[in-house]
Length: 330
Length: 149
Image (cartoon, rainbow over the protein chains, first blue to last red):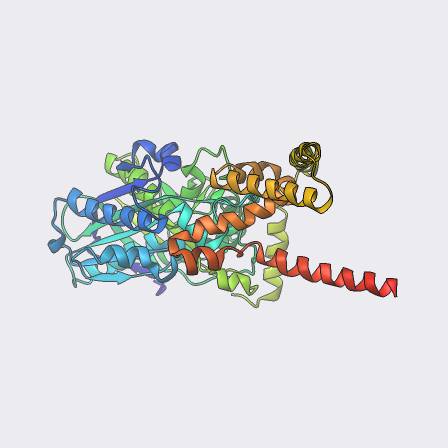
């Protein structure tokens, strides 16, 4: 096997998950599966940043509780978010009595934190860990784009940052969805500079990781019920299928993108959802319950992230992207 | 993988094919209607103030102040961004759009304090308009003065 693909012999289990999502998100397909549906995107806080932090804290404790554990029994928290210096994750961790590893993979954070948690457990270093991430539309807009009340038009290539958070409790024992392997992403940059076209920027990274995964495992897409990407959106998904097709891999039969399915596109979501919370919420609510229910047996979860900052794009740099893949099975 | 000149260029060319074309006819139409409506409101103010006896600079200034107030009020009420989303340049170009570009960061950043948040970041969006607007004004003024020599 190529070094990028790690197979976890003990196949750590996701024994419980927890999710929170905003009002717009809950109107879509995930509405019935989300644990906590917000009726106010401020979540009773005075700022959007505090709301994002509260969502993250809520799902971390939620996952621990749903697994029937206490925080003291958890050995590691792996979490990150989109805000500068990952303040949502570390400020949430301030109130959680668990060792904390902050990770940053932009919107790929869910897959990254699942892979890190699984590796720690499979290595026998810890018994259980929580992997969590989230994002908030308003705090992301403020950091990456314009003030909310500014009267601008959104370009049709753009996506809408998901307000929501998701957490998974990964355990060495118990019943749940097994994490059997992970393929770690390389940073890929094809020179896209348009910050409104994240799908086009991230698709090559997703393609690179998916190809590496199938090369290493010798499998083909039919070995999976679904290949679930994070937040490529409608356009990015189309591009990913073209790119993999060119390399002799046909994803058209079983590819689904969390960003593409999360919204009923009626207002300005255009290409769909994005943000760290996008794949975190959809995976931990919708896909987790489908897997536990038995209608999905094996999925390849490939979360994609655009590793830009407002400074780098202001200086005219192109957008480096990454994708991490995790194999989930029952 | 950056630096693979050819691959990048091919990819960008391929990606550009997907750029949804702007519906110029539709967007221009909406911008014209909304922009025209805002200007009509301004004209209405002007007639009323003229009727009240204002003239010259006083009249023009008061009309602008009223429109700025209206733009700021609608921004605070969360309405202006909805107008802007549909109207595009129609609501950005009139002076109400300028008011919106100052008021919206002020609202957004007030969580970081009155001095370093609201006041410091108030001109985040409008700053370039001021810099280039004033510079252009000065340049045109200079040309005008030179022609008059």
